Image 1 (spheres, helix red, strand yellow):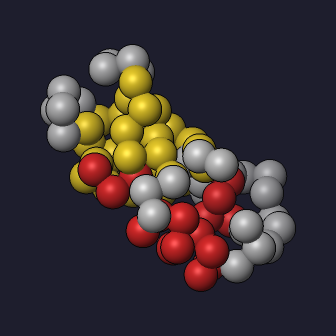
Image 2: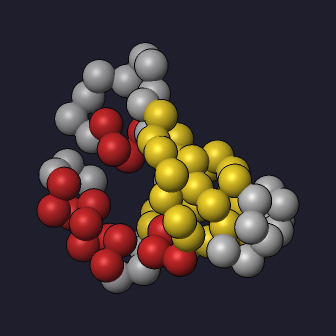
Length: 73
């Protein structure tokens, strides 16, 4: 995923997901409340958004969680 447009397209298509450990299941990127993003401290490449850890509130269990991004191929 070499450019931001590919990332946005994957999000729109519902192919990007996060994992909620409280629910013990994946959550679609579009179905959670995004709170913040933590950059990966040792990554300096062209795709920083893909290596971030997302902080989100799960709409199903109501907890705040952290997860890396995952792509459904």
